[in-house]
Image 1 (tube, one colour):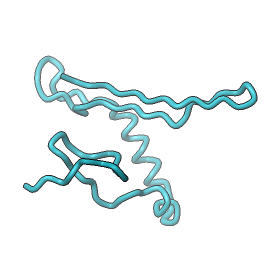
Image 2 (cartoon, helix red, strand yellow):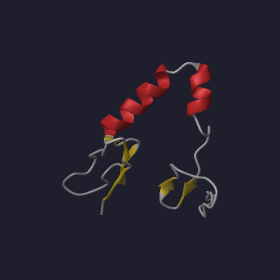
Image 3 (cartoon, helix red, strand yellow):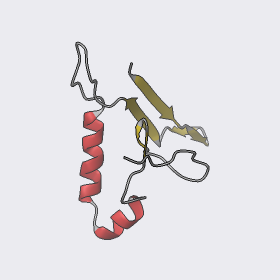
Length: 92
């Protein structure tokens, strides 16, 4: 089973609208078996993110990078974490 996610935020001010930030996601990121095994969801978007961070200078990276390490739970990497999270790292 593949799950797809979309979060869109809309702001309207003086009759003008913007629709960023947005989040696109898929879980799993790569299909593990079946007719489409090996297909990588949203790889182009991931590549754009890497290009953006690699284009930044060190000062910009200090602001943009939230953490040097990523926590994992039984489902995989935790992309978002913060106050109130119940996810805990798993021991190997």
